[in-house]
Image 1 (cartoon, rainbow, N blue to C red):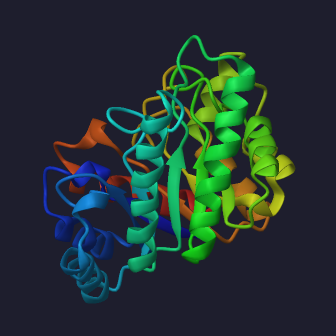
Image 2: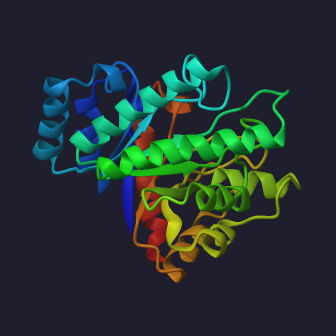
Length: 280
């Protein structure tokens, strides 16, 4: 299986450390978190793009995807007036530009909270328009736009595999696909919010399931816990991926919970997942 590191946890360290750790610890690739100081979309001029590509070449670690910071100030496709939406679209288009320049393959976004007063019809229309516009831009750039569901506490837009499948169908673009962050179906199933598993994503998305984020979970919150320290059935999830013939990337998405010691936990995460992989 192909495991990627995630650079969010390295935001207080150098981007080079993220690459060197990925090489040393046995990751196969790296997913770039698009925020300052390393890779904010509007900072990524040709010189900075070239610097990231040099790191990738030096350590033999490909950049598999670019994940811009969205859904909080100031960018959120789902809330605000028309000019605010247009500003968020322009920002994600810039992120797609960066992803394409890095040969990253995909740009990953989640659709944030639309506000408590938004009607289902308003939400559906904004999702459709956003993915249609951005999908066409990604197609022209030969990039893939991947959409990530969030839990019901994080967003009221797309929380389930079914909602994701419907959104992808309405967008109708070959350049728009979906993914599964395994924490979301695991926690929502335990909470009785949605009766879903990783299998559900395969059933409903089929070949449109283009990426996976995997970490452990406390089973209660959206916290992303280092593999081996939670209660998620990670080995069963890996077995599902193997049984289903999934050959895409699995990013071990450690975020700000481990920001103080990113190297320590990045190593712990991949070591645990490689051990689980041996027995499936």
